[in-house]
Image (cartoon, rainbow, N blue to C red):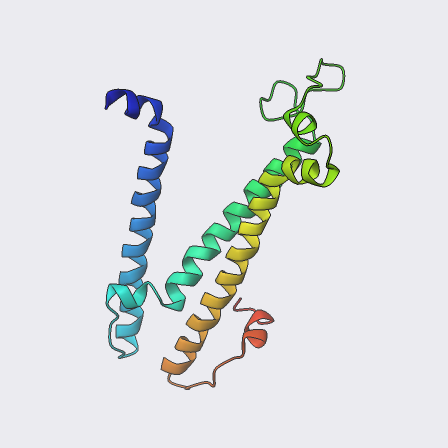
Length: 169
């Protein structure tokens, strides 16, 4: 058991930190949203309903959207730019390089597969960014329409396109 913990310490620590921080976001968002509902004389949500609400979806994916964009750009920039002494950066042009790369060896017959493999991390991060962006838009739109519904003015709901073009998004 100790060997497994030692061998997978980074995974276990990051998983525990993720669960703790995501749990904290859920609890604080849940209470904050219910406080807003109380102020507008609306019934409070139970946790399972909150986890399906626009407030939760928007808050979660707005945060993740920025993280995936940052990591995607970091991966692309570390592949394209140099930084002497950085383990993440490409070797400088005057430094020796290992010409026997994994992708060239295993994908020598397919330029497409080699390119896909060589760019898979940045492609995955940008795909996760796009998914997070879309879910942030969807959650924000749902939350905005709830706010319009419970506001004293009872403003009509917005379409998704109207919300996308508004300053609220």
